[in-house]
Image (cartoon, rainbow, N blue to C red; front, top):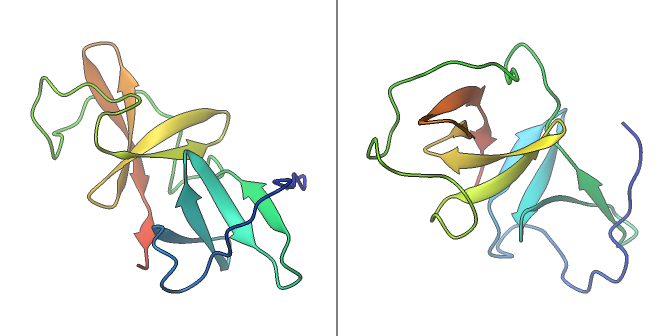
Length: 114
């Protein structure tokens, strides 16, 4: 993973910070304003994205969604955006949903820890 730092980040992520925490690659990151932040011990915040993998593929598939069929994912849709590979998915009941034409694709489960 290429290290990308989030410069000027004044908020400290951790238990009780108010942001959704996701476990991946052996650590916990926090969803914050469309970014996936990893809080390092020295106070530095890294920008992460969930990797495309067997668990979280970048696949085109129509699935039975956990939301109304006419729901459209995007800014302000009520679901948190999650960086995944080179695109943005939306967190819906522990799964990554990706808008695709007239449906959304299931890009797999994520472990929400708080």
